[in-house]
Amino acid sequence: MSQLFTKTLREAPKDEVSVNAQLLIRGGFIKKLSAGVYSFLPLGLIVLRKIENIVREEMNNLGGQEILMPVLHPREIWEEAGRWETADYLYKLKDRQGSEFALGATHEEVITDIARKYINSYRDLPLLVYQIQTKFRDELRAKSGLLRGREFSMKDLYSFHEDEEDRKKYYNTVENSYLKILKKCGFKDIIVAEASGGSFSKEYSHEFQIPTIAGEDLIIFCKSCGFAQNKEICDLRQEGVCPNCEKELKEFKTIEVGNIFALGANYSKPMSLSFLDRSGMTKPVIMGCYGMGPSRLMGAAIEVHHDHRGIIWPEEITPFGVVVIQIESKNEAINEKIKKTAEKVYKKLQEKGVAVLYDERENKGAGEKFMEADLIGIPWRVVVSERTVAENKIEIKNRNEKEGALISESKLLKKIL
Image 1: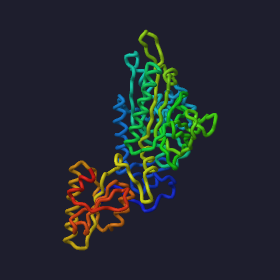
Image 2 (image 1 turned 90 degrees about the horizontal axis):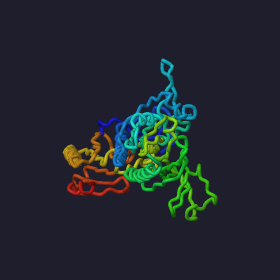
Image 3 (image 1 turned 180 degrees about the vertical axis):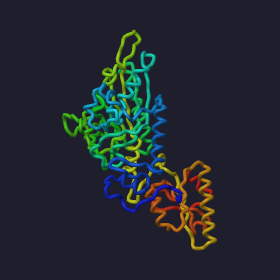
């Protein structure tokens, strides 16, 4: 802990209104540079990379191949798809030669340009590629921490198909994969809601929504049959009644953490992405797009998992599984025993592959150490103190529990693992 590049704050920043930004900054996970722009410090980057790896594993399982596309996009490629003038969220700039560029807010144009160089025949399909990249959007409401940023992390998967039937089949596969990702990241209540394609597509889309009072979206949801729609596009003939089962509909505030779009030929036609089918006919490639923001998932996890003391990380994405805290004694001999015991526990946990944060700082009281551990949100707290060494025990406490318990060293690993 003495070597960790971070400092906790007692008070929340006055210019942050969202819980996720307040706790992440207080806990030393991120540092705000400007509205909607944050640096990820060591603790924050560990969490972000864990989420990215959960996402990456599922994308690979779907047959996706990872690539990395540029952030700097020439104007011409956005003009091909007809979005240079209509996409008002783009950051635009000129270089010293007068050429115009946009910072990548999304990558449909770029991936279509790549695909048209390599897709020629039905034998080249389906093609499934994804990236995890930094995106930039001129966001007018950058006030929700990691939930609505101007610079943020995004995973986008693009699929290329012979026809709509194959695209629909893959679309449903991705939907199931997204649910797996969200459950692995610690989300239990997940709503898959129908939505419009927005600025990305003329086709339909589905949003993956997490119910929470901190949400900016409003979802109409039927608990009986699972019907859900974003209220912005809701077209119910009989308000308050589910069109599928006629049961009562409920409204929920939610955070959107992922979306999937049926792009059809919206980009392949204007950008001349075509292939020769099995009969030798030239046809446009059918596309799908599937987005999920790792940094947004991180913010949403905190909005769902926190209390008055701080963050409560789900175990799958916590920066550390255990914090080992040694509490100093005024008795030098006892203090030496405390240190040896704490170090032994620390090394044993590491040997078993447990990610451990060791709070060995001197001249810090128990109260301050406990407060910081709760704020950071590590699932398990292990305490070695004068009391525990006197009883030849170790105190262990889960972040969700009010009281700790004394157990033997031999039972510690079993309890945590």
